[in-house]
Length: 462
Image (cartoon, rainbow, N blue to C red; front, side, top):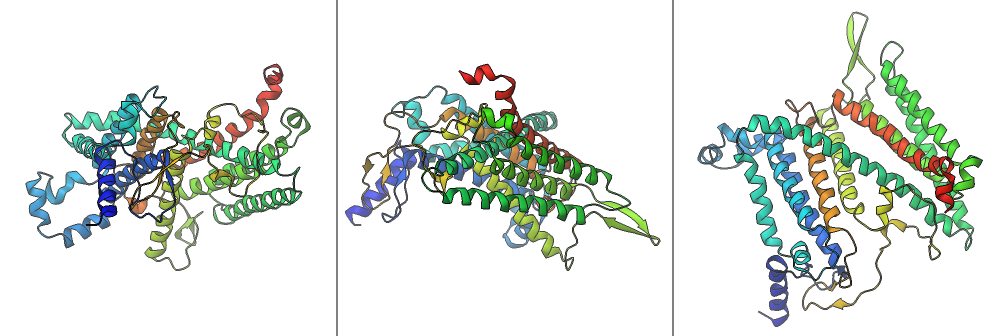
């Protein structure tokens, strides 16, 4: 074995069993920062458990395992997992696994309280020892299956999960509002240097409003009916009207006096997302039927071209991918310094060194740091030698909330008994009201920072 390869293997062992930062084995890979490497590893843990929960809620996967795994029945009997491993699948199994993952992240959240530097022993545990943490995560997830009085546990844990899931939704919406303000602020900073940013702002705003109006027209066409679907008509009118009001509010003179950078781009982003949530809510609503010509006809649903089950599976797969992409974005982005303003009343203070960029959201908060050369492997930039660049405690707490949100989403919230991952996007009233309420919370979170400076001018003049 060559020395370079031996060194690379040693470094990977140091990452798994020591405090060294993790990196890829290939030296041609781009440089990676220690903070990024750590967050990537925790995200990998999170995704592994999430995929496991999805598999547990899929009868299709369960059937495939029974047919293709040799001695499947015998193995289930030896594990005392019930007939065909019935205790390892279904909503109760997902609750127990997510309980373990939530405990894992909550314990680390408590463990890393007030960690300010990466040189301490607690920071070393946070940034390294991945093999032992992976074993601890497996132990936590497995421990949920050995809890006493499981019926009472499932009932109590369901409400804990609902509370945590709602809080995670609020964080997601705060991040969206912060993203909208950040986008407008960054591109507006380039106007004084190059007028082309005016054109870019106008074009993107026009496209986003066109998408929002198009979505509203689409839903009016396919999700309303002259004889039924009263709630659909009501909420389409309410949400469309609220989007129009916030757009006018954003450019009103009274708002512009206190927040000159407030504009239509932010309201366009919010309008598109509200239309998306409205569509998702209407698609999640239980079907309605009316009697026509002596037959019961389903109304207010999007008609698939062929009606094949494969089309439904594709839609479900795409929707699931988008959903979990949003979860990962919320978990990772919410822990950066720049996104911390999302948890405060937003102020449109433009930094003097603000520089307009097309990919503004990918700009790092940190400055250049020294690289550590790793023979035969990816170079690591230790960017936390002078102090942590994100809150370890808050990072783990967001993943704790994300664990609860995954648990509730995969099990269809309060319609858990008949939940299947293949029917994730099918109708249930709990999902409908959660998504519809998310629309109104999103609009409130956007309007409130606009109104606060006008309501409390003395505070914002200081």
